[in-house]
Length: 215
Image (cartoon, rainbow, N blue to C red; front, side, top):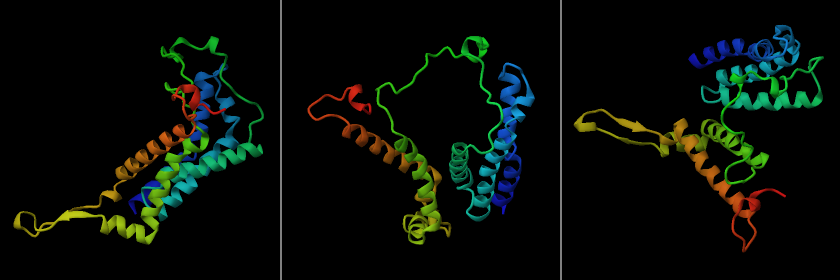
Protein backbone atom coordinates (compact mmCIF):
# COMPACT_ATOMS: atom_id res chain seq x y z
CA UNK A 1 0.00 0.00 0.00
CA UNK A 2 2.82 2.39 0.86
CA UNK A 3 4.60 1.63 -2.43
CA UNK A 4 1.43 2.14 -4.44
CA UNK A 5 0.63 5.49 -2.85
CA UNK A 6 4.20 6.78 -3.16
CA UNK A 7 4.32 5.69 -6.82
CA UNK A 8 1.09 7.54 -7.58
CA UNK A 9 2.28 10.75 -5.88
CA UNK A 10 5.66 10.63 -7.63
CA UNK A 11 3.98 9.79 -10.91
CA UNK A 12 1.65 12.79 -10.81
CA UNK A 13 4.50 15.18 -9.99
CA UNK A 14 7.01 13.49 -12.30
CA UNK A 15 4.90 14.05 -15.40
CA UNK A 16 5.88 17.73 -15.38
CA UNK A 17 9.60 17.23 -14.65
CA UNK A 18 10.83 17.05 -18.30
CA UNK A 19 8.97 20.27 -19.17
CA UNK A 20 10.31 21.94 -16.03
CA UNK A 21 13.90 20.95 -16.93
CA UNK A 22 13.47 22.20 -20.51
CA UNK A 23 12.30 25.57 -19.22
CA UNK A 24 15.19 25.78 -16.78
CA UNK A 25 17.67 25.11 -19.58
CA UNK A 26 16.32 27.83 -21.82
CA UNK A 27 15.85 30.37 -19.02
CA UNK A 28 19.24 30.06 -17.29
CA UNK A 29 21.52 28.65 -20.01
CA UNK A 30 20.03 29.89 -23.26
CA UNK A 31 21.15 32.91 -25.24
CA UNK A 32 17.80 34.66 -24.84
CA UNK A 33 17.22 33.63 -21.20
CA UNK A 34 13.63 32.77 -22.11
CA UNK A 35 11.03 30.56 -20.44
CA UNK A 36 9.00 30.60 -23.65
CA UNK A 37 11.64 28.68 -25.61
CA UNK A 38 11.39 25.82 -23.13
CA UNK A 39 7.61 25.80 -23.32
CA UNK A 40 7.94 25.33 -27.08
CA UNK A 41 8.76 21.66 -26.43
CA UNK A 42 5.71 21.08 -24.23
CA UNK A 43 4.21 18.30 -26.37
CA UNK A 44 7.31 16.16 -26.40
CA UNK A 45 8.18 16.96 -22.77
CA UNK A 46 4.75 15.97 -21.50
CA UNK A 47 4.80 12.78 -23.58
CA UNK A 48 8.22 11.89 -22.16
CA UNK A 49 6.90 12.46 -18.65
CA UNK A 50 3.81 10.33 -19.20
CA UNK A 51 5.87 7.61 -20.90
CA UNK A 52 7.76 7.24 -17.62
CA UNK A 53 5.17 7.96 -14.95
CA UNK A 54 2.38 5.68 -16.22
CA UNK A 55 4.58 2.53 -16.28
CA UNK A 56 6.16 3.76 -13.03
CA UNK A 57 2.79 3.92 -11.26
CA UNK A 58 1.56 0.60 -12.66
CA UNK A 59 4.75 -1.18 -11.64
CA UNK A 60 4.61 0.33 -8.17
CA UNK A 61 0.98 -0.69 -7.67
CA UNK A 62 1.21 -4.23 -9.04
CA UNK A 63 4.84 -5.38 -8.63
CA UNK A 64 6.29 -3.57 -5.64
CA UNK A 65 9.09 -1.13 -4.78
CA UNK A 66 11.96 -2.71 -6.72
CA UNK A 67 10.66 -2.14 -10.23
CA UNK A 68 9.20 1.36 -10.83
CA UNK A 69 12.38 3.39 -11.30
CA UNK A 70 14.31 0.66 -13.11
CA UNK A 71 11.74 -0.73 -15.53
CA UNK A 72 9.79 2.53 -15.77
CA UNK A 73 12.89 4.27 -17.06
CA UNK A 74 13.61 1.49 -19.55
CA UNK A 75 10.05 1.60 -20.93
CA UNK A 76 10.13 5.40 -21.13
CA UNK A 77 13.44 5.36 -22.98
CA UNK A 78 12.13 2.89 -25.58
CA UNK A 79 8.95 4.93 -26.11
CA UNK A 80 10.65 8.31 -26.37
CA UNK A 81 13.33 7.02 -28.77
CA UNK A 82 10.62 5.50 -30.98
CA UNK A 83 8.58 8.72 -30.96
CA UNK A 84 11.68 10.79 -31.69
CA UNK A 85 12.60 8.63 -34.69
CA UNK A 86 9.01 8.92 -35.94
CA UNK A 87 9.19 12.72 -35.66
CA UNK A 88 6.14 13.06 -33.43
CA UNK A 89 5.54 15.88 -30.92
CA UNK A 90 8.64 17.77 -32.06
CA UNK A 91 8.83 21.54 -31.34
CA UNK A 92 8.57 23.93 -34.27
CA UNK A 93 12.00 25.42 -33.55
CA UNK A 94 15.11 23.59 -32.43
CA UNK A 95 16.95 24.87 -29.39
CA UNK A 96 20.61 24.42 -28.56
CA UNK A 97 23.28 25.95 -26.38
CA UNK A 98 25.29 28.87 -27.68
CA UNK A 99 28.79 28.15 -29.11
CA UNK A 100 31.24 27.04 -26.44
CA UNK A 101 33.34 30.15 -26.99
CA UNK A 102 30.56 32.29 -25.51
CA UNK A 103 29.90 30.14 -22.43
CA UNK A 104 30.26 31.59 -18.96
CA UNK A 105 33.56 30.56 -17.34
CA UNK A 106 31.70 28.91 -14.46
CA UNK A 107 30.14 26.43 -16.91
CA UNK A 108 33.53 25.01 -17.88
CA UNK A 109 35.42 22.29 -16.07
CA UNK A 110 39.14 22.40 -15.39
CA UNK A 111 39.43 18.70 -16.34
CA UNK A 112 40.51 17.83 -19.88
CA UNK A 113 37.82 16.25 -22.10
CA UNK A 114 37.94 12.47 -22.35
CA UNK A 115 36.26 10.60 -25.19
CA UNK A 116 37.33 7.03 -24.44
CA UNK A 117 38.58 4.82 -21.63
CA UNK A 118 42.19 5.08 -20.55
CA UNK A 119 42.88 1.62 -21.97
CA UNK A 120 41.53 2.65 -25.38
CA UNK A 121 38.81 0.02 -25.52
CA UNK A 122 35.59 0.88 -27.33
CA UNK A 123 32.32 -0.50 -25.94
CA UNK A 124 29.54 -1.61 -28.24
CA UNK A 125 25.98 -0.42 -27.68
CA UNK A 126 24.59 -3.83 -26.71
CA UNK A 127 27.37 -4.34 -24.17
CA UNK A 128 26.62 -0.95 -22.58
CA UNK A 129 22.98 -2.07 -22.09
CA UNK A 130 23.86 -5.44 -20.55
CA UNK A 131 24.07 -4.27 -16.88
CA UNK A 132 20.71 -2.49 -17.04
CA UNK A 133 18.97 -5.43 -18.68
CA UNK A 134 20.52 -7.97 -16.32
CA UNK A 135 19.42 -6.08 -13.20
CA UNK A 136 15.87 -5.74 -14.49
CA UNK A 137 15.73 -9.36 -15.65
CA UNK A 138 17.01 -10.78 -12.38
CA UNK A 139 14.63 -8.68 -10.29
CA UNK A 140 11.66 -9.78 -12.38
CA UNK A 141 12.76 -13.43 -12.27
CA UNK A 142 13.28 -13.36 -8.50
CA UNK A 143 9.80 -11.89 -8.04
CA UNK A 144 7.58 -13.55 -10.65
CA UNK A 145 9.05 -16.94 -11.64
CA UNK A 146 7.82 -19.28 -8.92
CA UNK A 147 10.69 -21.85 -8.75
CA UNK A 148 13.27 -19.06 -8.72
CA UNK A 149 11.27 -17.06 -6.18
CA UNK A 150 11.06 -20.06 -3.83
CA UNK A 151 14.78 -20.74 -4.20
CA UNK A 152 15.71 -17.12 -3.50
CA UNK A 153 13.33 -16.64 -0.55
CA UNK A 154 13.52 -20.07 1.11
CA UNK A 155 16.08 -22.54 -0.24
CA UNK A 156 18.97 -20.08 -0.32
CA UNK A 157 18.02 -18.50 3.01
CA UNK A 158 20.32 -18.86 5.99
CA UNK A 159 19.56 -18.45 9.65
CA UNK A 160 20.01 -19.52 13.23
CA UNK A 161 17.28 -20.84 15.49
CA UNK A 162 17.13 -20.77 19.31
CA UNK A 163 19.60 -17.92 19.63
CA UNK A 164 21.44 -18.21 22.97
CA UNK A 165 18.97 -20.83 24.12
CA UNK A 166 15.94 -18.65 23.54
CA UNK A 167 13.03 -18.98 21.12
CA UNK A 168 14.44 -16.17 18.96
CA UNK A 169 15.29 -16.84 15.33
CA UNK A 170 17.61 -14.88 13.07
CA UNK A 171 17.49 -15.36 9.31
CA UNK A 172 18.34 -13.75 6.02
CA UNK A 173 17.79 -14.41 2.32
CA UNK A 174 20.95 -12.95 0.72
CA UNK A 175 19.76 -13.39 -2.86
CA UNK A 176 16.63 -11.40 -2.07
CA UNK A 177 18.62 -8.29 -1.20
CA UNK A 178 18.87 -5.70 -4.02
CA UNK A 179 22.56 -5.26 -3.26
CA UNK A 180 23.19 -8.92 -4.07
CA UNK A 181 21.59 -8.48 -7.48
CA UNK A 182 23.92 -5.57 -8.26
CA UNK A 183 26.92 -7.61 -7.09
CA UNK A 184 25.96 -10.55 -9.33
CA UNK A 185 25.47 -8.24 -12.30
CA UNK A 186 28.80 -6.50 -11.65
CA UNK A 187 30.65 -9.83 -11.68
CA UNK A 188 28.85 -11.01 -14.80
CA UNK A 189 29.55 -7.75 -16.63
CA UNK A 190 33.20 -7.86 -15.66
CA UNK A 191 33.41 -11.30 -17.23
CA UNK A 192 31.52 -10.14 -20.34
CA UNK A 193 33.79 -7.13 -20.70
CA UNK A 194 36.91 -9.25 -20.38
CA UNK A 195 35.65 -11.91 -22.79
CA UNK A 196 34.56 -9.33 -25.35
CA UNK A 197 37.94 -7.60 -25.30
CA UNK A 198 39.87 -10.86 -25.42
CA UNK A 199 37.90 -12.00 -28.47
CA UNK A 200 38.91 -8.86 -30.36
CA UNK A 201 42.61 -9.37 -29.69
CA UNK A 202 44.45 -10.95 -32.60
CA UNK A 203 46.22 -14.26 -31.87
CA UNK A 204 49.94 -13.90 -31.32
CA UNK A 205 49.73 -10.17 -30.73
CA UNK A 206 50.02 -8.19 -27.51
CA UNK A 207 46.79 -6.61 -26.27
CA UNK A 208 47.36 -2.98 -27.17
CA UNK A 209 44.60 -0.36 -27.40
CA UNK A 210 44.40 -0.63 -31.20
CA UNK A 211 43.40 -4.29 -30.87
CA UNK A 212 40.42 -3.40 -28.70
CA UNK A 213 38.84 -0.92 -31.06
CA UNK A 214 36.20 -2.01 -33.48
CA UNK A 215 37.21 -1.81 -37.16
